[in-house]
Image (cartoon, rainbow, N blue to C red):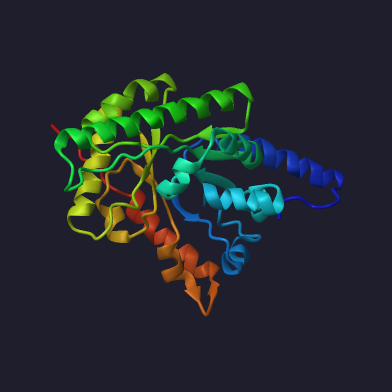
Amino acid sequence: MSSPAHSTGSDRVQRTLYDVTARQRIHSFPRGIILRYEPTEALNSFLAGNYHVRWVVINFTDAAKIIRDHGSVHAVLEDWQIPIVTATDPDIDVYARQRDDIRDLLEDIQPAIYIPDAGEVYWKESNQSEEEAKRAQRHGIDFFIERLNFVMSYVEEESLDIGVLPLAKGMYRWHYQRLKDCYERYDFSNYAFYTKQYTNGGNYIRRLENHIQNLIDVMDAENIFIIARHGETHLSRLPPQVTGASGIVQFAKNCKVNGSFHEDLFTDWRERLESVLLDKVTVVQQ
């Protein structure tokens, strides 16, 4: 979608400007309401030529398939649409992922933001003791740290046009204390937070609020990008440091009519959600 077969001089100048802007944007934080890519004709048609869409979240597995089919994720995006490729796929896919898979993907998604993932960090199961649960969580965190170090080293060694947005791979304060040295080594202040396991409302949303607050308290997080969460009520309950949110389900419910996505419905819906997300009052404790 983004590369014409023949380029004029003005096309090449425009291409250079897009490249420079993209390299700047991959090191900025993706604020606001952002869509997740799904390989459907309706969404591809909606993205084509759409200047209202500046960022697009793409799961690792979807990005890898686009690369196999088209050579680059940018083939399904416009020049001004920057991919945010997240490795937060189902556990079976994450565990099967090899370092060569990651190297190949990073080469072919440039310029992009990448959100690494590895390991399992879940709350205690009913059949686990407290110590068993903590041991499993420590193992998941350490595996994630190893993966994050690998990604950061590879991006630096190969001078890739990749901005890394680290996943907040934790829930409790001690999780983030275990992660803190790694995060501080790379001077991170912005984080991604995967929310898909916080479903069924009620206590799960309170858990999500608490776990995000633990990240803020331990890491002094400036901006948090939540993955898989566009519900208006949920966004209203999250701390003001949550300034970016991605998803697809609510977009489809609110902006799709007779099988097609409508731009005017999208802009109105996004404006409403961004007001909820970004216009929160920060309460200063006296």
